[in-house]
Amino acid sequence: MTTTAIPEIDDSRAAAAGLEPRTQLFIDGSFRDALGGARYTTENPATGRPLAEIALGGPADVDAAVAAARRAADDGRWSRVSPGDRKRILVRWADLIEAKGAELGLLETLDAGKPIADTVGLDVPETATCIRWHAEAADKLYGQVAPSPEGTVATITREPCGVVGAVIPWNYPAQMAAWKLGPALATGNTVVIKPASTTSLSLLRMAELASEAGLPDGVLNVVTGPGDAVGEAIGRHPDVDCVAFTGSTEVGRRFLTYAAETNLKRVLLELGGKSPQLVFPDATDLASIASNVASAVFWNMGENCSAGSRLIVHRSIKDRLLEAVSAELASWPVGDPLDPATRIGALINRGHMERVLGYIDAGRREGARVVTGGERILEETGGYFVPPTVFDGVRNDMTIAREEIFGPVLSVIEFDTEAEAVALANDTPYGLAASLYTDDLNVAHRVARDLKAGVVGVNAYSEGDMTTPFGGYKLSGFGGHDKSVHAHDQYTETKTIWITLKPAP
Ligand code: NAP
Ligand code: MG
Image 1 (tube, rainbow, N blue to C red):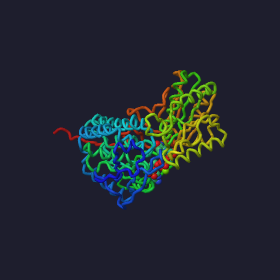
Image 2: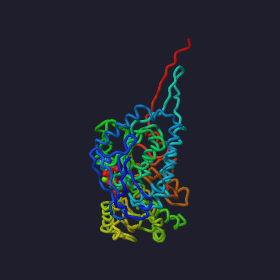
Image 3: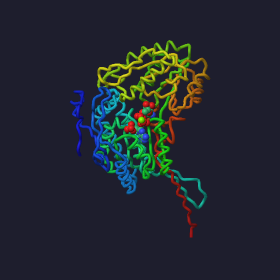
Image 4: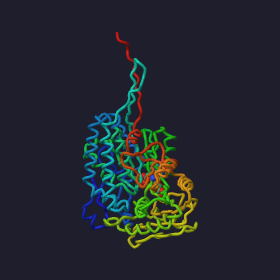
């Protein structure tokens, strides 16, 4: 196996850790260059400097990876392994991921600009938890026996789809991989996965660890490279049976076209959001609500599909809540993602930062008022830093309230009545997550029921845990749910076997 050292590693702590990131495609159990031999350079978003040279895959590499995955699916080297043995291998993989938490967290931070406290403290442990949870379910899920007539037996069982394609984003590179790989592998599929081209390092290392854990060759294949080449080739491949995508609604739509124009593969889409956070006038403890509100929108720099980017607050408490949010922001330091105290790191790249700043300009132009933030900072580092930005006086028809910004920008919108709050919350093309704060059980139940969103938090911004499905209404999703046993359903086909019994002689 060949590896490439980070050529211009720009932080002494990272260099001291002796990182040797994997930068090649991972196909049929080994690392290899792209067929064309080409590479592209990624950068560290916190410095704007080169980070690694990654293999530039293309459609021919996807063909090779799918062929390996197809062979592995067809000969049953994984699907016919007993569920208990599949579980053991995947649990071992989760254990290895956890054991390599410091290394994987560092790779993730260098690649994505995410705070090291998050990558080491949350992302990597959650990645291991996700794989372990699905693995442990592998030998605990049963089929059904249908209530068929006397003289017959009918079973309803689940079988793996076969070859699963996965195309994932850059905001939670390791975790999004695990959300797809955990259930797809636990249910016996083989996989070809494409990381976002900006963030390939953690997944490549995870693939290597999977082999070490005993995953047979060809079961997990990673093809790095750009979406319009590698992603489209996966989406259109006639030998891919199912494709799972997380990313923008715009690209998600394309996967439906790819499937429609080729083999009608199953398409699972987890897309964007413009999630509301509703605060009712009876809610007490504004400091704790402010802390939740800030986490919901500013965690991961707001690069979060379920970011609570619209704060819909009762007019009578708006000023007090905004003061509490401003006070809360004192505990959200922005800066070097490698500093353990940092809570807001760098945005993923220059283009995305400019897009976020463009939205901030649009907010100002359309008459909203910046309470805090609003400008690029730490420019001298070369990194792409935008501080938490809060807009007051937002109307729900302004651009910043309608479009997914995917950055640290909160729009504050006032309401007077419960009906108005619900109408504002639902007046969006998205429907991923929502949260509401109230001490009134009646308001909680009524509003939670009325919100058109896949995940509703009451007095919490939580997305739930591994036991709960995650997916959205409207433009936020299509075809299935990540996490929980619902994710097992989406990577399996339902099979009926109907048996007619011969009468006793
Ligand atoms: P994106 O374009 O949707 O990228 C997501 C994944 O799809 C990446 O792996 C990307 O590859 C791939 N891809 C891109 N174009 C493709 C195509 N034509 N066919 C197949 N695959 C393709 O998202 P983005 O450009 O990174 O970000 C744009 C916006 O999407 C963000 O600002 C945000 O609003 C939203 N977004 C949402 C989520 C989410 O979790 N829901 C995550 C990320 C972004 P490459 O990036 O390697 O080209
Ligand atoms: Mg894109």
